[in-house]
Amino acid sequence: MKAAVYYSLDNIMIENLPVPKIGPQEVLVQMKACGVCGSDLMEWYIKNRVPLVLGHEPSGIIVKVGSKVKGFEVGEHVFAHHHVACLTCRFCLQGAYTLCEQFSKTHLEPGGFAEYFKIPRLNLEIDTLKIPSDVSFESATLIEPVGCCLRALKKAEVQPSDSAVVVGAGPSGSILTILLRLFGAAQIIVSDFIDYRLEVAKDLGADLLVNPERESLIDVIKKATDGRGADIVIVTAPTVNGYLTGLELCRKGGTLCIFAPTRPEDFLRLSPNKLFFSEIKLVPSYSTSHIETRVALNLIKTKRLDTKSLITHTYPLERTSEAFRKAALDKECVKVVVLND
Ligand SMILES: [Zn+2]
Ligand SMILES: [Zn+2]
Image (cartoon, rainbow, N blue to C red; front, side):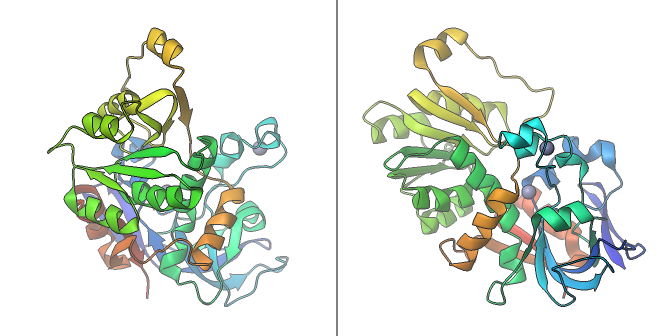
């Protein structure tokens, strides 16, 4: 089978790999669509694991079912989550599924950017969702990223009537914009350096758009909130500057949601004095669990979340390298999806 093997961001090769063999409790899926995630573009995050097949936002059709599999059949359309928690450890029992030891050890094989992938037993049992016929494979690739955004907004305890700022209008920033509307935020302000992305954010329901190259984000937020600052700031841009700005934008007692990781060697200088007297809460949110993926599918199925305006570019599997270049370098795009027709 063909698979896109990642060596580095500028070296992704289409190679021939064996079709994964399945055990009695596993299934084989023909990939139909797989989203390119922001984390797929972070070379520092991937470089110790190369070469590998990336892709953790896949959907497809079951083509082979192990002899002991119950509840799944050949021909069914599915989304498969790449990481699943054990459900019984101390983290899981407290609902912190993404911190579970098992979570990051579980994987689809070899990954979503391949003609076929295998769903291991645990992933199949805990977080493989059947996609109804009126949900397209492309739309289903958004289940995982929407899940990540849902979890962040739940953790940040967004309240109806909040003023919310989204720093960075890439795929996650755009999904957060839609979800903030659904959560009842009164005012959604989106900032990005790329005008194309701001235009999309406007269509998705952002109230105010800011390109910090042209105007001061802090001035806009102060003006929009009677000088207080925003109730919630979600930083999706993985830079120290993004977080420094985010802190400045938060009101006293507000929440700064850490949605994207910076490089491990990057540090933020924080003043405990300022944090103490402002009572700003720092809320990191890593990945998503089987709880939010089900909600995400429901939002997509009921069209509460419009996937059409989010997916701006698609590429065939053979051109995965171009898809990555578009998402990483060009940036005149929101969600980029790789297809296998
Ligand atoms: Zn992702
Ligand atoms: Zn666990």
